[in-house]
Image (cartoon, rainbow, N blue to C red):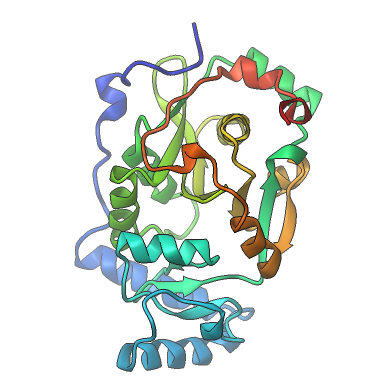
Length: 297
């Protein structure tokens, strides 16, 4: 069985999950959990500055596309309210190192002082994980079920409060960017055709900004990440922005970039594949198991 997905997913796999994030109860839950997030001891000292910044921006909006002049000291990386979430504004902001984000209230512009970045020329895949990829029965695809990946990323996790930045507003934004060819998903399917892992993100010049990931089967999200690296490297991309460093990305060779270094990275030439349009898998997971990043340069 080939693990490059080229045919449509079975109907059951493509069925849209039941939406449970709309309505008054869901809105109240998001508000309560969002406030609880900022009331934690490590964040509460930033709440007054954030609240005043949001209030000021609501009364007197700044320019639609944020720049470094709007960055606040607290919370680090906050640059005001994202009043304009049109595609041109979001993409122009991304090219400057900003993204819209918010658990509660209006979405806000952020550009953190440190970003977790994987230079695709520096990917290191351990022999043990190469064996895992060769022995799995998973299938990898791109843009086959963007909505399903986003829903899974936003889904409740057993035993944890349901705090997610993938609110209905964020879902609408990234669904539109996907329909316009700027946002992409990576899917991992099991042998029965069930979606068991994946991630989604946005192309920003020579960088793919990975926004969220999920897995319901062991190693599925790891395979999605490494499979993404393999394809992006072949397509001429320079790096993947993971925003916050994870142990897995660090193991693969990811490093933290300063804001200045990240913005300089965004200014590097963009490959043709960064142009809007759907993506499709060109390598199997077994292919990726044998991929040597340095040999692709």
